[in-house]
Length: 619
Image (cartoon, rainbow, N blue to C red; front, side):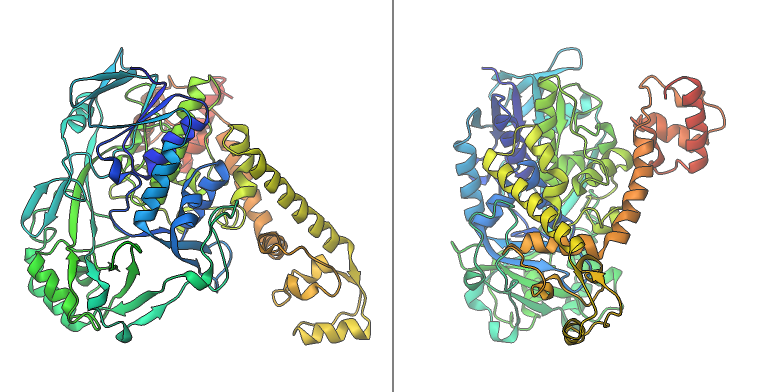
């Protein structure tokens, strides 16, 4: 049996990788240990959030599936940070986790060039450090031209609650250590990481009248630019807001040494930005309470997810903790919280294409690279599938730059800086976040998706129509001038802005913070397309700031264009600091721009390196 690309793992990274390679015309095999867990959400039943929601839109703009599948299976849609600027606004969806899996499996099964096999992969087949296939647990081999590992939290995974350790996956499934051990044997540096999940509670056992209801956004919104199948607001389910209290904190402190983390049973490093509730109580001891959310998981069963209450406490302590919360005094725990440890590789051992430096034709994506989150995994999976396909086609890889996409920021951070704890994408990680907005992911990336063959004719036509509408409205605003007539100034007064004494274009008038595009309908007619109007308004109002970031990005791109030969020995370069030499030799940056972002490499080192490379005729 032989395939062009084999994808190992059926989580969010694996699904996107398999779909991308198959849709690009390559015979693809998705190998997963349990078909029922394809596209599973073992933790939070949501997609999106700050920065992450923008990644989902970027996946859609490139031709991926996560946004479309989220729209089909959403229980609630919400636009976050609407009172803040557009750089930090993003969507978040509560999804029906059972429907999400069902719809994704349906998509996979209906995709040409894609087969699914239920099995474990124990080893890679190699020829001179080049991957040529996989070895299954039953001893069978399958040949391929490339392999993409998307093993999630299943790589040598262990479940922890209190002092109990169980070798198993997130749902208690069988897991095998062989692949991880073999990766170590081939030269990969293996890290031990940890994440966790909170208890699930029976909804009928909760007094919802004591909780604050948190509805979704009242407008009908969707992740996908194709906007097919998004849930209308009137059908959305609410979430509920509650808080911990002093009694909760006292219980946690009393039993702290019984938790897996504080009892010394944990080996892996946990996520800094999604700590367990016991970690929050210890690290933020000055806080009287911590915010929690109760979120629906599926219409298929009656339970709520207690977001923000991850723990590895023993079951009997979890009972006390849950019952200390207002409204949850008699709540029934349907599934106890747990921590899970798993193996990951050192992400500095992969290239920006997500191909590994250790083995040729081996790609990695998702939690095996040290990230946390479904969205980060899906973004990497999509890029791994694209780049493995492009390599088979002898075409240049697609490497998204930091000013083009959050996916570009994510991958660059992984390969340039590495991770110590599970990496979570944040808006603060992006230097050019005003360029990387929720509203413009399609304008940034759809041309790439079209070029590689993942954007359909219909979707691309819709994209071109949108661009034309934006251009037409912008030109109309630039060409329409109003003069200081009594009628005009009365109107300006009515919308609480300063009257004019000279003529002004609607374009310049719109730059005033208090003037909204929709208020200018008496001068111009606009199409009934909220996304188009939002894009026009944001682009005009933030024009100065956007141009400033574009100017900064141009400087960065100048460094990115300066390629560094792969045969450079940094220890031979005089006048570079010792730490910088060590870091540069370890990471082997592809460009001067990437070199400048390595921790421990300062501007003086870059200046010396630049002079050295010029003398060598590198650029």
